[in-house]
Image (tube, protein in one colour):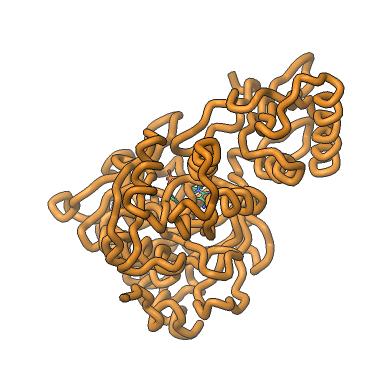
Length: 433
Ligand code: DLL
């Protein structure tokens, strides 16, 4: 049995990590200055040159890059290598505005797949595993990234892509898949379907799942682990930086190690741009220090998160990020109160509901309204109006104590909310229409 663990990198000392980061950062800044006029202009406006960036401590002298910059420079404006050196593009799933297109040299693909291989290894994967990749393949990075990582680990890779739930289950059972990679919402749906088929967790060969691409709560993890009889690990990433594998969870299942030999992470105050210390919540900012074709300096992810340098029981030394709480742009402001969909999910799962819900925000007579539609589980399904009213009241109370807001809650029949094979759409904000 072979493991893809790289202790010389993943358990390196802080001094070593900082030395790598400083050297690579200086080189990367020179690379973009020489090859990307867009960056050179931004740096000149800020009054910095590559000579000013010698170590990680100089990072904060650099300007931020935002999604607006990416849109403005679309499609080739931030590419730092001649196109003849680029071998692939991937693109975000964004539904509004221009998509972000990211470019890769072969070296960039290798390092991306390396990050995904680390994630599979941290979830217990070896060359003896059968790894079913049920993230979408194509422009979306989920399928290609984990596919490549799975090859590097030496797993037998089953590239089912998303969708066709019955076929997914057939392959899991027939090929004895031990590792499943997909979004947490799709994992929950697969679990729900297997349960309906009468399969108990010990009849499902899976032992681990690598789930990410969207926010999911700790309660949802417990639920998925129970129905599928697995350990569920979180994985984080974004197209702009490569894709999945920027950070991944280990056996401690308590935050995700950021691959610090490739990415430098910062947390900033989204209003002021000030860098915040460990433990304080803010916007996650990344600098990619090893990418050739599409390097990003101080890219503002809009993900709201906390970093921790505390020692981890798995032995890895790379900094950990907590589960992102949401995004600065999906945080809802309802009657002046900041609400993350993940907070609503926590209330629902704590009360025994599944993760099938929809949040509808509207504005009636100049006042925001919050409607939450929640599916009953088959076990609790009833047409007894008194019972339904009592259940709804309990959720309203739970939401009030979590958010300090009055919500209207409607229980709906099992299976009436559309399932997602990729990222779930849980919020409908009618105020913007
Ligand atoms: O979602 C890459 C990915 C694929 C990650 C498969 C993990 C697994 P994008 O489509 O560019 O890339 O979306 C990136 O998704 O900024 C976060 O807001 C969100 N996101 C990704 N992973 C997580 C996670 C892929 N584990 C955006 N928890 C990011 C919460 C996540 N949010």
